[in-house]
Amino acid sequence: MIVVSACLIGIPCRYNGGHCRSSALVQHLRQTPFLALCPEVLGGLPIPRPPAEIVGGNGFDVLAGRARLINHQEQDVTDQFLQGAQRGLDLVRSLATSVCYLKSRSPSCGWSQPGDTNGVIGVWAALLVQAGYQVIPAEADGR
Ligand code: SF4
Image 1 (cartoon, rainbow, N blue to C red):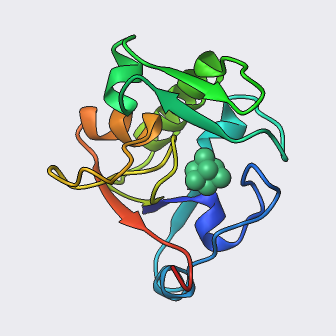
Image 2: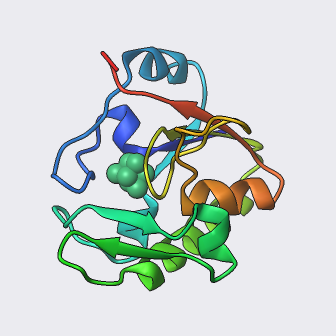
């Protein structure tokens, strides 16, 4: 069983109502059972929604209470991001899985290798890595 960011398989759950379909990932999943999740929707945020950014650090800093999620309407949506990340982790824990393909550069799903100063580490990705899961960043077609 593999866990994937829902937008990567074409589900229109992004902040702008769009998706980030990866044809290569969709092809890979044809032979593999998978569960597609969107932690921001799990946290109760609507589609569409104002985009949000981590202010004051990365996903690990949000988990530690040192950074916040602020959307483009200046609203603090940290609680929704944390709640969605926790619900996503709870669902992953209920599966026999260890690998999660998550959308790059997202404040929830983003994951980058140590030393990548331009990368984004999102809240859900940080929580999954902290819990011992392998997170593999994936990108949409054409990126
Ligand atoms: S990147 Fe993650 S949080 Fe953003 S739309 Fe895709 S699944 Fe949802």
